[in-house]
Length: 179
Image (cartoon, rainbow, N blue to C red; front, top):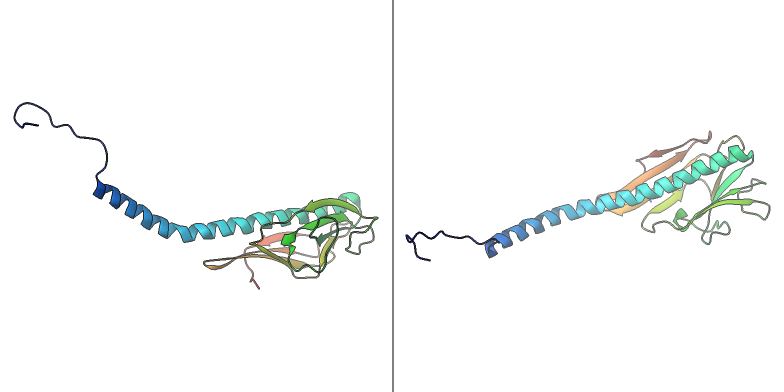
């Protein structure tokens, strides 16, 4: 290109190598900063999703007890066909069933209402008051207690609790401690 001859300088679209390296470096720094907080957000979402599933099953059991005018129980299950009191964690699944004799065990005279399958294994789900819980025909809980749902993350633990009162009311709390 000869200067002064009336021709215009034409620029080419694109990036130079130094511009690209600076852009990639800034992007890498932002990803490094954002990755741990993204991990915490995902842990929070897993705990929240499992909390909502378990909370919904408590509401279902209570409403079925009132509707059927008979006791309804919830128990831990690993295979979806019977209660298993040897399990320590509820994330293997649980059953909601009409418990005619109110013994907390799924017997031949009891009617299975719903099977809740295995949940996320990263989230621990512990009930602090025995192996089963249930509601009487008036919707009152047989036992008060709390489910604690936990997942380890970079800030310690993501924790939620579902607190069940004797009146049958369940509420979610974002406090509690993990074992």
